[in-house]
Image (cartoon, rainbow, N blue to C red; front, side, top):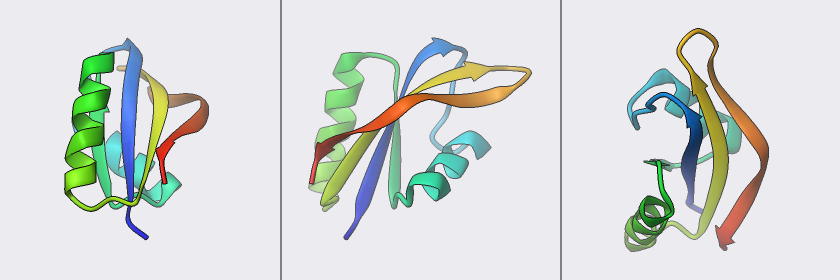
Length: 82
């Protein structure tokens, strides 16, 4: 089963899909694809993109990005579909 992960950055700085923090999240949650969102609109956009790529399960996690400490996950992942 292919799993997608959307990282919703609610606090702190920027996070890019090709950064080390994103790859660490992919490994932690066993995801095949990742998307980064800063708003609810971007969550929906990433969700649709992952559905069209064939992801059967899509998770969303909140994250806080700090330049000194890196990225930390806030709370439990929310399953959007699958």
